Image (cartoon, rainbow over all chains, first blue to last red; front, side, top):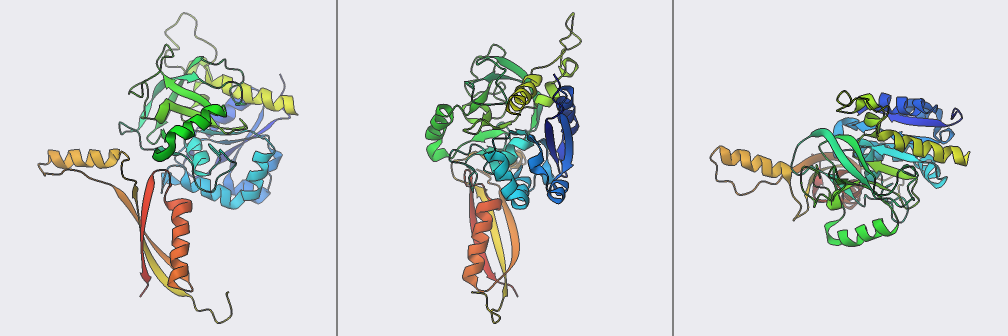
Length: 272
Length: 91
């Protein structure tokens, strides 16, 4: 289908990565995608011309202070009103890996009561410690609220790669139970780490690769339009990106990551 | 009120950001293990970050307020971090 009237903006600053893969994923679906430096967006004052905003992976601003913190505050400080308008208009925002950390630090996720002034969750240092770069299994837990996973049936097991050192999702320890309850009740829980059969990890390594609370790998806001995840869907878009693509008789044409891009593009197309 | 007569002073703040008690500190644990391997009788290591911040403000109170706000907005994530501020006039 032709989606040439849909425009995606991929934010670039020093230290972001996989912006090219993300651009290519959108372009494969005939979406016009641009990689723009934060300062270019500020200068041309054109954020609201885009239909989809993406914070890609990487180590924005060297991960100084905390992973994602500086880009979160810098983006909010420079484009505060525009960013709020973007969210309030229900335009989708995707945060991949470092982008997920940015969305949490910016108060855009989980955003239980709208965009929060201070973070309501954290992505802490992996447990066990270390930068982990490998493939993981994810179980889709969303019941249909998240616009980025509408094409994925609940319970489906997906395979995507991770590459991070700070991905341990956590809520404030003194009320993590009630936060989780809210997350589930609002249908904000999207992906949990699992084993290849889709069974729970019991919180244990290696299937839970970073010690995340409740094995959480990705969440969305209550409206389902802002979505962040630690795994990289743009690195699992084509069949030839999969680790075993040469082993089967007929390699699959696409990977599971494509479903996320297809879902959001179809959602936006239905709105225009 | 900022009148023409407001005198701004320089203050230097030392901000220490560390994990709240009860939170696992994988960096501290790894450092402890290394020190133990080096035959030091180390029980535990906790890692913090220190920021030295030079600010201008009209009073010590205002400077304290400003730095506290900086901590809550950027330097610490209240979900997992504690912070300590010590502040004095810069000489």
